Image (cartoon, rainbow, N blue to C red):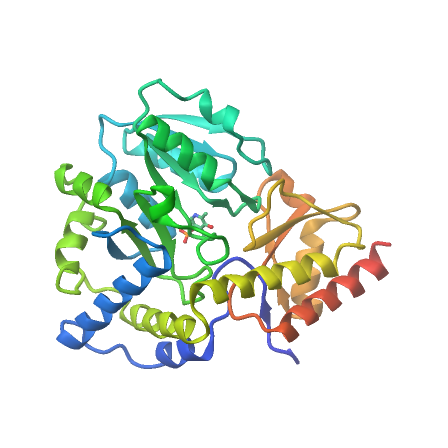
Length: 361
Ligand SMILES: *Cc1c(COP(=O)(O)O)cnc(C)c1O
């Protein structure tokens, strides 16, 4: 390989030098006041990035994002809840599967793959005794960004607890917990935070915390009651992914130093815009109805999406994201998160032009 591999997937993604410096070190012992202090700072900085309401807390789980989704279903919900699951792709399906597994009564708003959610779909579920709603802010499998304002309005009007999986949308798309009245937001280390995989976080409002405290314990490793209790002193119940938590601290400071949340968001917006602009004359169609800034799903007019992904890897040293299932023959995805420089983005766009102008036109 002459050039270094460029990673334009949606996670894990490329990390900045500040992060790599930390993850290259031995993990220190963590039952110390020094580590606790860093954890308290991580908590405060995450809450600030999410505009979490006064009295919120963050649980740090050593797990992939699905672990945090499962923990939310186990600990924030209980068996007297009646849950709405917005299911527009594989991550919505995962919430539905978790509700089934943990015996939460639920109904699915099934959306056609790649399609957005509108008010009328939601209003069918008003006044029917629903108590909670689970949604993936960006359904990463299709790249659709749901309109969180209409979801928030619906939940507020109907007194429904709103739990948002913002694992891919966090930082890429605007999310204000306080304004939208979100009870819990799930985030994960390997998406726009651009750390190694292994840490997932649940940021909880006072309302979600109260539910956790009242609910019976349904598990041990993913217990949010334990996470919150230990978190009071900046600790976790079990050995966490220490290096990733330290790299989170480095990354949060890097975001802060480079202009904060809005600047980070702007950077991702511009990366996505430049890419979409750069490929607009190529024989590719934008797939999602309302796109997140974190990812672009593209449909190839001729040829195979799998071939595109493989050619990018082998010929251009660029990782793209294939799609699963039947749609994977025609649709693939390009991520816009992680430590992507303007030069990296140019190399990506040039490769698209070379491949599609030559081979498919
Ligand atoms: C990546 C992602 C997840 C988590 O997947 P893991 O492989 O468990 O980390 C969950 N939800 C969404 C929307 C995602 O993009």
